[in-house]
Image 1 (cartoon, protein in one colour):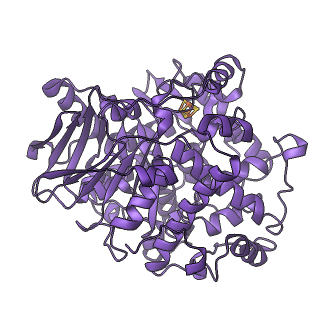
Image 2 (cartoon, rainbow, N blue to C red):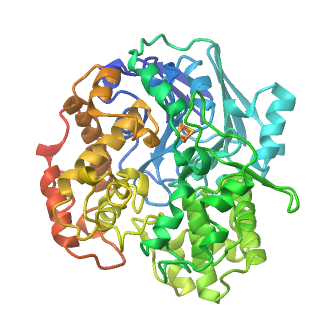
Length: 557
Ligand code: SF4
């Protein structure tokens, strides 16, 4: 089976020491990316670790496909115990860092302990340097990127940076790379901030040689020549359809369609797009560099999720205002989905929907934990009581845009996903929207009879995250292509995903997660039975992985 190559680099921030560990036997079973990081995290983070404590560890990983020039591979993975969900969480970012990371010769970097002072960690193929940077305290992401460029001639696509939100322990702080790309979901920026690490830089000329089968060229060619709506409008292309099927969360989830959708939909974003945007090596180029000169706003996106969170869910029908919110989140290092939903919760509590001045002020206050921002920085699950609004989250993770009250298999996925109400964990919505060719489509009604498909999709997404292959490759990948690319049967490859999901669940079980955490704040027909079918398909009991269902190589954390 194709897998990543190169050792694990452990950076002990407390002692300013590094060690290298051969991890080939793990790579052979977990490929790379999320699978590799999950196995390492499961075995090396104590099960009772405080997400903000020095005992938590942050893993950055690439997979074998980052040695190719294939489209859909300009991505990499981060994993740690999440301050938002309190479970193990992996987050995936695009941009241009992945290949620079591979050039260091390491397949995985582990940050352990805590530095005494604010530090930048420089990783090259010649070693690691620790640079204390007290002057960068509370610096924004662009300010930190400018410092690295001016002082070290390091480009932003060689960096992973946290903004003030990460330093201040905002539970949904992101790690930013290439300035506008985020390891967004799950608050891993706050983990990096808790370790007093302002940035990690990567450089070198020691990428491992990994022979990638020729299928990569076919996939790349098709991605380059295909006429696909996402090439013009990215994920926001789906917004009109979501609105039509009553599936666009609006006004802090109290409504499911938005009268101002035309102001924030795919056409609105496309009208502000000023050039093509992509990730490293990707000819699909679905990113959305946008600007509005009059308003002085330049950003990337918003994607569908952010256009929902800061648009319809906040009662805002002006794309330029949403772009401004997006830009602020990138500047301060915040997951724009969680930031938007949390701001929407506050707007609901104060009956201030559509107040964009207040929205932008709240984003800044959250990043600095000022005033009400300190409460909101805790996330919806912890702040909803004080705000007096409903808790629109699962396992502490606020909801993504694809509406489970309409797409009931997606709702089942939100309930059971280890990362909480996260659309990318199974991308189940993609087989329930009426966009799908009839032979592949599932009736969105009802949560029963969908467990086998859900298990397969979770395993497949975990495989993509391990490879690493972008999930938007779905129209270009097939079981045969996975087999050719990764030199293994499709079943063996799905087993890698299954092991990854099971280890995440097992880790979370040791922290107290069980069936009571697999629940939703709304009713869906057949949900309880659907959850039981899911457990049966996984071999779990009441949401808990029994010893018999653990991978042979599971070791106590
Ligand atoms: S499809 Fe889009 S998000 Fe995925 S790697 Fe290509 S440009 Fe990046």
